Length: 601
Image 1: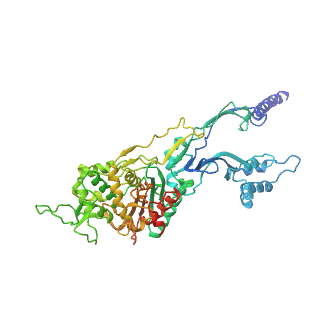
Image 2: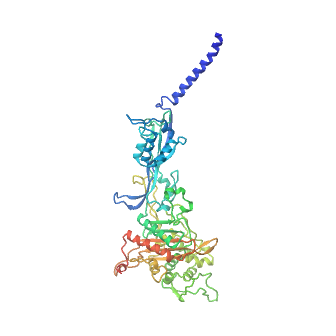
Image 3: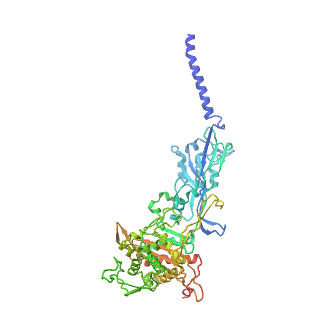
């Protein structure tokens, strides 16, 4: 009997000893002595993204006004299980109830108390998102273990767009990973995002970092700041006027570019309808297209100014050169001289018309003849010099280069049509840049929307910064002056854009009404209306013996119609929108009037 008991109890004791040994090892490793480090770790810390700034100054600080900025914030999540199991109380006080902690959460984060209490009691759902907040006082309260349990605060950053939806297509947005997805945010993502840091340290048995025993810390480097040439006050007026124009004239969409006439800097740029840049990931891709840069279209009659400049600069014609208005003109052999020369609707012209009047009245016949007779080589050369068919290099993603075929391959129809803006496609920024050359005495300066990229402390060290924009003489100064003098009467009672006339200021501009093409043919009744103008014109002296007021802005406005509308012409819809924008620009930049007598009427 004693032998049987020995054989029975011996393995039982041994197994019990083994279990006790294993259990105490597990307890020591995972439950007891938790302050002793057991696990090493290394993690990356996210850098704060750089800001995007306006060109205007804050009178209080003297610095540029921020358009977009990132700030440190915390994402708060709720673990009802941890809240229920924890014993929380202020020293000397009673343990806090779930109801009390729910009230603290709701008051601190501005949440509904009943909903918060329901979340706290629902132990079947862990790590529920409460709110993201940058309030440091709220962070101090919710992470205080004598007041709260079950609230997890994870540090992150919040991207704030101070202009709300304004300038959305220029600024762009960021995705869930914090990378730019469109606009400046995408183009300068590598500079804006900065350099992440690293922390190397140890955790205790519960996986919590022991802060005082960190082995190394490499702090993150904040991203660089991008400074734009845009003026936020003018941008507001541009978007307001453009939105009013869409509503009044029934256009589906519209876009506008305003350039500094001398430097080519973008003062405002808008595409409507817009989107919310703080929710760019939810917007449709087609809604995020910046149509001022990344969309090509036939410009229509605004191209006639370029043709006129080419004719004057090359010596082919002067503003007073007369041309026949007969579409069916024949040569000495009795053959039709021009192939598919476009007409002018119901207009009945005098037998002969000057180049000046052809611009003022937007005569297709005369301008088509000029382009045809100049020849593809000459006209194509000037189109290239004005920047058509190539990207401008503006610092925005998705820029298109337009379509201007090799002049040596132009057919007879293109010879008649390219001069009036048909059979070619351009972007709005290209056309505005071409008019900037006319405003700047024939010197085209590549448009820019970024003034500088600087480090967080203002230094440019280690940050790639573009050099000064390229300048190129396109036409002579005298040809530029003659072109602007011809364009003066367009915004008058005798021209096609009397609704673009600006009280107190001269306007040198041109209308364009381009029929939309789809599937290889033009769609009846659908148009894009454009007006592009220079204000002041730079060729009108405010009084005898005084030099003309130099041009200040170049503005292009296009309205895109998707159904038949009464006022689809450039002079009837785009021109009044241009007038509102130009008028506000003169006020904002305090430009002296070059027609002060009109202000006394």
